[in-house]
Image (cartoon, rainbow, N blue to C red; front, top):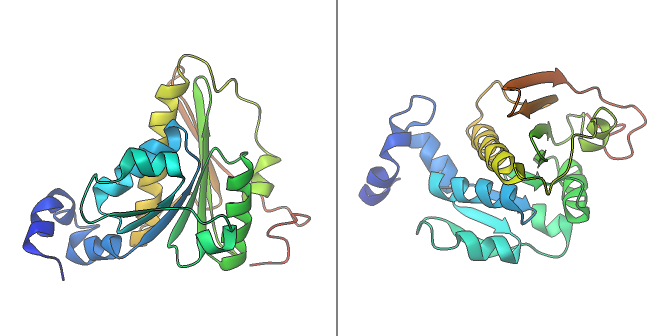
Length: 215
């Protein structure tokens, strides 16, 4: 049951037919793990905390950036063991999926059957995709389809990271609430300068070392 204070705090979400009281209660009881500590991860973490996700497991720098945003969100630091960091989570976010901790979280999430969303941002282009645990394709399948899209240190990198972090948080909320359609098995690429958004299917690789033989 939501308290009167929580109903007031999340009223703009609760009135949405896709959320309602039950959906807000689901958000408040959910645990989300976030790998990464850059602007993309920080943006996603702040929006998830504001939306009322009950528990966030994050890196120490990210914990310092979002702790105390709302009394309903408990922020803890990631366990060093990827399997422990994923255990009990509703969704795992890999912000900057090429970073080693994110790759480990991704593999642990697939093994545990936990949905994993991965995203990255560069100079003017960002991308995001997701896998639903044992339902491939996963990040290792996706990386074979990705093209190199620029430098993370370019001037617009922070802007693109903010955009993709917002999409990352939105997709996490959708998965917690069971909303469709989602980006599971699909790749969304956003080019902010061209004003172009593309969505393509990701092909599951039967030789994948992470999800092959699963699903």
